[in-house]
Image 1 (cartoon, one colour):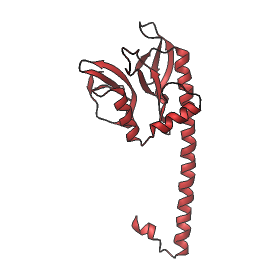
Image 2 (spheres, rainbow, N blue to C red):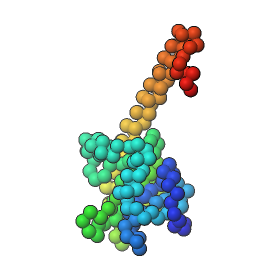
Image 3 (spheres, rainbow, N blue to C red):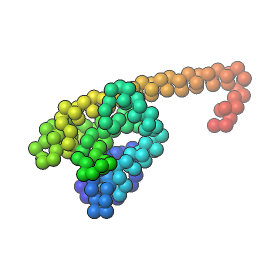
Length: 189
């Protein structure tokens, strides 16, 4: 598990969390295969880049999360089956120091108590990696439950969108039949 330069493959993120690098604040990024990377950007910048890549309105997501009773940072519901849960992975050294990391919800295998100094829990992933958290096991499991709830909401949207796409396709086919094959829409495609 050597630390290389991250290639920016947003679809393969297992987790990203804040770390202190010799150059200053940085981010440790792990992919689904278990490879670790260091990014010189801080975790907030990486989070913004991830949200931008998936066209996610983070402000609106935070509002929905608060309405559902969430505290702390909201999970990133990026796509159906791809949600990153926010977990406090380190304690702040100064005001404004980022503390939360984001972990792929569907890759979480278990959460256990940690014997490591400075950690209260350990999150084990299905790809063999583990992440220490300063939050208790109960707090981490609560964050996972809230993320699961938001992920289910995202799946309902996907099902509705599939239904609407199917309905729209049928309407286009009916219009094409009415106009005896003269659909301008299909000629453009």
